[in-house]
Length: 276
Image 1 (cartoon, one colour):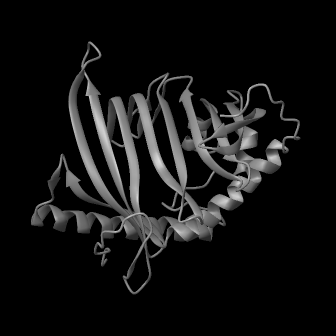
Image 2 (cartoon, rainbow, N blue to C red; image 1 turned 120 degrees about the vertical axis):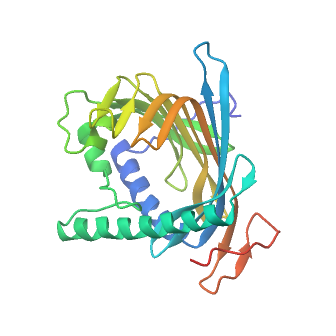
């Protein structure tokens, strides 16, 4: 903890320049992330009408990249390994997903649009600044490192171009940026209004639904996901249904080469990397 009696007179960076640096470094991190394999464990708790936990479900995924596409391969569900038939179906799902993402990227490239890892149209920092404002920069300690925390508030009057931009416009939150590495290390926020996309079939998020995420530095070279949490009520594409809380924890980062040789980073237990 910083000494509360000590005044830090160091000037704060320009917020817009800081966020543009974060964007640049995030792109670089995605390139390095392709060399890693890690485990992503999710816990979904569904609440009953009285606020008690009605049901708990868990899923564990291996996360890696195939042909430039991030892949989440389901390994366990509610603590049980997948059967041979379930593994076959999971492989088919992954193959279809890779083809789908590559096709989305191809179409976006033809239109001169930038896309993210999953083929979605990216919202750049420049666009974020049109949809809302970053304000109230201050220097805070987080996990023993200096960070610059900034608040974000969407502009309800901003004109949006995509459904995802509508989500951003109705969001408020705070971002923590590592001052030395100029990387997003923590974020949290919530939605000011309830909204539906596609009449609620594509997405349905209720007012007050909150989220948070954290990253950590791996192998002293790159900041990668550490934790994601959400609370409230939301549903997307009929596949994800939240009425309670969800938490994802990323761990066991291992670096591997194209030769499929694992290079220990955090785990000393050798494991077989994906062969797809």
